[in-house]
Amino acid sequence: MPKGIESELDRFLAEYPQTTGFEVLLPDINGMLRGVRATRHDMHGIVESGAYMSASTMLLDSRGVLPEGLETGLKDGDPDFPCRPVPGSFAPVPWSGRPTGQCLAQMFVEETTPCHYDSRYVLQRVLERYAEIGLRPVIALELEFYLLDDSEAGRPAPLRTRIPGTHLLQDSPRLHGLDDLQELEHFLADVETACAAQRIPIGSTMSEGSPGQFEINLNHVANAELACDHAILLRRLIRGVARKNGMAATFMAKPFADLDGSGMHVHMSLIDAEGRNVFAGRPPASRPDAYAPALRHAVGGLLRAIPQTMAILAPNANSYRRLGPSSFLSVEQAWGVNHRRVALRIPPSDDANVRLEYRPAGADSNPYLVTAAVLAAVHHGITQRVEPPAMVREGQILEGDDGRAVNWEGALDGFERGGLLRDYLGGNFSDTYLRCRRLEAAEYRSRVPDLDYLWYLASI
Image (tube, rainbow, N blue to C red):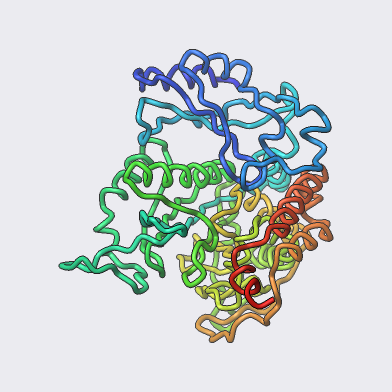
């Protein structure tokens, strides 16, 4: 039992004495929260010994089905492992219909041995490398999502706000539209209240480029695990608050073919033992690529690793619909200052707060694994002094990607061939992740979609 976790529970119950039960939340390999509900009384036992869940809980596919052919499951009897509360994660659930608390959990196979495919542990392995070189990541994540209309049709539709003074619905891009935020004021106020209760440090909220699409930014924290906690809990919170307000929210990467996809952008810098940003400083105008060596090498590592990280950045079949040639993003090995058509952007900032924004990941991805992959590539780049290609100039007009297809099978092949992530994330995890993803991809391909009937049934 982590030191002090029992006193954390006691303090939480003293602050929220009406609490009747708890939800113990376990992020699976897809970044989806699984778990159990526990009574107030039972929570004390969970703090002491853990909530026992089957090992296969971590390996379910996107539907919640255990893929056939894994070593864990039918072959080994699917043993139960203790899932222990994460220190500092007790919080109320403001959208619940009864006074409820929650906590995140991590799976262990023994008293002090984390499960090798627990995504929090995968990130912890990478962070150990940073401790060895005296650097600490500062991370913030941005999440895009859609609110959905209450449609009686068989397909979802994005929520469209009204044109003021009419019952007509908006049908045009609403980037930074304040009217949309005002019409959703009650929902957004509930989100802000719930975030404050759960200590999730949100910053700005904005209307994105498609009807019903929004972005909420999280503030930077000098704790990569905590930054990922914030992201995965914010997704749960938004879905819960939307449901309370009679709506639905989705973080699918591409829920609508004719509208923008939703991403999860990773903002990061690195600080040394004295708290100084090692990316800090701006180059002279005559040398736009002459940034600090640590930043240049971080960029070099990230760009070189893109082919083998895509299987984590885009974890399911729908993820790759977001990466089409007309999308407002790139997975090419390019970087630039204040340029959103490149994979790796340096946002505007003062000299002391220079940071990187990594853009390829989808909103549907696992925050822990994405951050682990990003930090692995950055660490490799810095320690091996990997120089990046020439940067895209600010304001440069790009004609688009070079046409290379990005698909699920190709991404999985890149993950399997690349040795960098296997080294950082662990061989056992890499084998398990690859097996789970390939089995889900095969199952997805085996289904005959309705489009096959619409196009081919009458004529073939």
